[in-house]
Length: 164
Image (cartoon, one colour):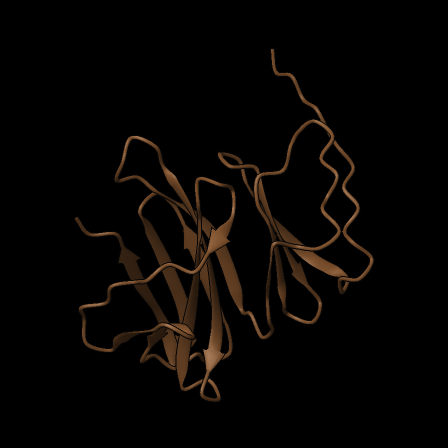
């Protein structure tokens, strides 16, 4: 037997219309992608009747091309990471912005260690990939790894992950 519950959510009226959603089941976090390509991030909603707060905890400014939640398993308790990709410098680079869910149920920008050529961390921006953004990119997150699929001249993949 499977028990299914549903709850109606009403986004705050001050936000642009929603075009897609992402839900992270471990933390009950919700991301709303808007028609202006910004992203609203709501951590740790309560169920079964979650009223959305009057404003998101994080509002990621546009443009945002793709986003995903992923789990980081390096401790007994997994951590939730939200990742957003955007074009940077007119699309000559890809900007990755990371938001880690703190144990107090607040997303914050963590420091990211990059030790590979063509990947750099900027504390004000995020991680910059020396890869042309192209027409579109997609991010898919899993456990400890995420994949960036981008198209510039030909389909390409960039697999990134946590190293110990």
